[in-house]
Length: 315
Image (cartoon, rainbow, N blue to C red; front, side):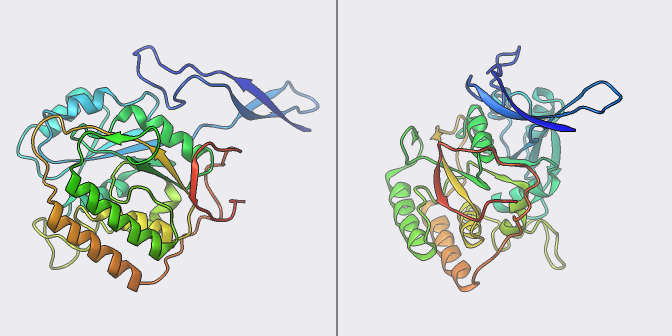
């Protein structure tokens, strides 16, 4: 016979190295333990395995920043993937020195969007987290994104503009542009996003079909080209496609820090226009549905996160 029983356990918040674990802060969880008790043999215990987590880090000439980012990654990650944008400094060498198990992949074209597409294609984890290599996104926040996914989200969306969040990096011009573009998306797609253009997000693997970024090197293209979705508009593109697929989105408070070293390639005017164009074109393309009816990773009951859009419970 099979007996289902709920047991409590209290995981340690840190491993021996002092890094946060994927369980985040110390708390008491409930897990389902399946006990199979054959009639003629001893008892065998089966505990559901935790979801595996892949972290994707696009980087171009970030050798000075990567040590700070990689050293702050939580313990227990399934894999870390660095997407190198043809760096001319020692980005790859530094990454391998500070995180020996890191997987390095190259880009097929230019731009952050293409880097993410190539990184997503290389992942094998149940959950995928996207962070920046410049130190602006805090790797110590990864457990709270993972927690949101485990509690029921398909997509855990970072926000700098909700209680417990903030930014020391965003300018007034960029904040104003983000505010109005955010308003437009919420009006068009029925979402309640508070931060449209932030790149700290995590999602279940099944969301890749809805996100639909293309990493392939198409005939007539090369590494010097940028196609649709290859630029900084990628965060808006992802958020819109997730909304069009009617997936369950939870917002997660996040604090954006200043870039540690170097200067950003972001241009408030030209990239703002690309974001506006993204909203217009994606609206014309109609609804995109994702096959999320059968989630590979079960959802835990209950949530303290804000639900922005909903879909039917996975069976």
